[in-house]
Image (cartoon, rainbow, N blue to C red):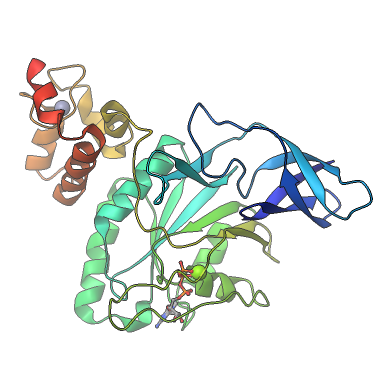
Length: 314
Ligand SMILES: Nc1nc2c(ncn2[C@@H]2O[C@H](COP(=O)(O)OP(=O)(O)OP(=O)(O)O)[C@@H](O)[C@H]2O)c(=O)[nH]1
Ligand SMILES: [Mg+2]
Ligand SMILES: [Zn+2]
């Protein structure tokens, strides 16, 4: 039998069969992904083959079919392992907030690096519009300007008042979409607003830390009445890039592309090399300084402490 994983809770996976029936399954055998060490071998969105267990209403997953794409993050508990968030996506909506919790542009840039490396179109949604002052809105328009200029559509929403929700529905229609972002930004609340009847659990953010409580604990795919599938996910704490080289980071920074061919050195990483067209574009204001600062911090993290030593051989 063939099916698609709609929820994974550790050992058990809910698989939707072609006849729309959902069956609980376990996995058997080893599953690998490009030689990476994974904390979970199968993720929501995976298309799988399975056998029904004899005399039981459960199944065994025997094979994961080839993935079109996937989103990975570094495991927080086992740092040399990657965690598969979801696969076979048409697009991602990345949810952030200007406040409650406060905006982290670096996180957006880290996320985009991951989705960009798999060519997954990504939308930037700023939620909780109802809570924003004039100053907050000004910050929103600044964010929108940075990201729309480099090709990421940016939308302001409020799950509470419904602002922007119809536009978000238009984006989601007939697509398989991952909804991602920090804990507490309103991913499940927005999902509830988009698809009435789901009644996903949501929870107020902490008064003390202004951060979410990690309410959603497993990714789950929800069918949308108006067409499409939405995968609500647990809040991401941090990204890590053990699977990326410094060149990968440079290649997947979208707006560098039109400048990097003009750098003096073919292998320029746009950090401290002379005659770097990317750095010039930052200085001229053609590339956002904030985006470039995130880039430098990601490069530092990817390359580790030896980085500056290795850079001297150009
Ligand atoms: N004022 C306001 N509050 C919102 C909005 N969207 C969500 N919230 C509130 O924000 C809190 C967190 O929302 P959740 O939907 O649980 O957040 P989440 O992103 O799913 O969080 P995790 O599951 O922990 O990753 C809840 O108290 C929601 O009611 C909004 O647009 N405006
Ligand atoms: Mg949630
Ligand atoms: Zn350069």
